[in-house]
Image (cartoon, rainbow, N blue to C red; front, side, top):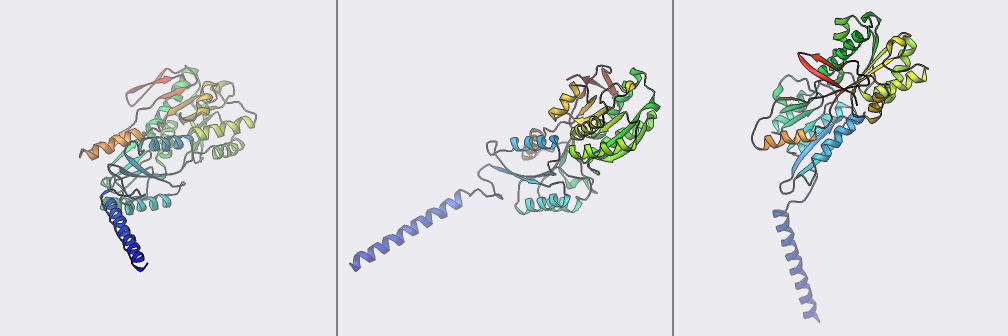
Length: 348
């Protein structure tokens, strides 16, 4: 019996040694999937998204997620900044600790990124900026940027308004405009606000107020309610995204006023940006929104193209702008010219 027991013990120990050896072999030759490591040819991409404040932002996130999938050879680490730069900085530092292959950043505001981007550069991790820009002391702190020309978007919307008033015989001094701005300090807010402000000064429009709407529908409605109480003669509302525009329309209609392009007969014109929110596009078809300057959120494939260039040892363009359309509820203006370029106006 003692001999049999000893034999059983020896066999058990041999089994343990064999299993341990096989486990060691597997760990050395087949790396385990973790949040910080790759598997085979898998490329790890850390994406710091600023938040989920709008339909545009949701579409933007979806474009990145649907591009950087395991099936396409990627592992995506997504961090939602919840509209706070501190959260995004923490996310980037976590990506650096995880030694990801690439960092993609959609910054909540333009400034305050020098230190953390220097850390990424020191770690040898390429940083691709998407959507909003960063204002840094040294452009070498990021690899490249891809997104929209927000100032051009603002100029296009303003020039359409100028051409519309000319065609309709509306005097410039009769335009009383309020601007519901986006998140203050973001590239989209800065560019779109500047586009309107420059045009108002050039054409002699009355830009009566600028108020932050944070790119959200609830805040857009709240701000519009306040503006309607402050100014009785508003006839143009310039909203810096579709969610704000939809909120503003709610407030205008609740106040017993009518939205539409017929300014001469007392309607309040709404101008917007993005063209992603289906409700907003429906409002264009109903003439509740007179104009939308498109902002394309589908950055995923473009970012992937940049990563493929970098993987091949090639250098992408430092700044890549996306071509975008203009949608209008009225055929009054067929095309506009901005910076010697003609842009056709599309009726959806």
